[in-house]
Image (cartoon, rainbow, N blue to C red; front, side):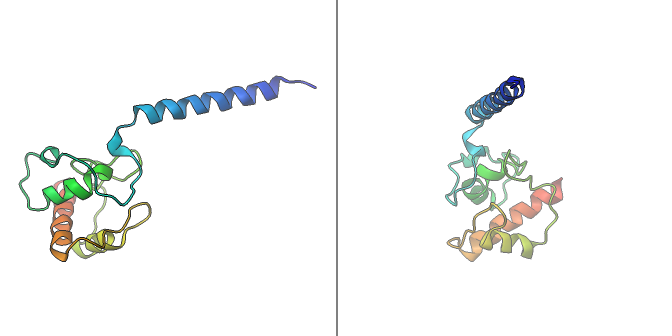
Length: 125
C-alpha cells in the first residue's frame, strides 16, 4: 500500500493546525467571539473626533466586537456597510442577531444612544 497520500494528508492537517494556533496567538483580545458581556474597552479611544452621547456606551458594549469606530473585526461585521433604520438597529441591540448577543438589560435611553451613534457611523461612511 502506498503511504504517500496518508503522509500528505497528515502533513496538511498539521500545517492547518499550526496556522490556527498562530492565528489565535496573534489575534487581539478585542477580536474574540462575543460572550454577551460588555467589552473591556477604553472608551476614550473609541473615536476621539466624535463627541456624540452614545460613544461611551458604544465603547463599553459594542467596540470589543465591532471595533473602536465600527470598522469590524475578524469575526464581526463592519457597521459601515450596513444601512439599517434606527428602529432596526434598536431591535438588533435589544434582541441580538446571528452571533451578536441581545442586550436586554440596557435601558431604553442607553439603547437609543447607541443606536443613534451606530446610525451616525453608517452615515459617515
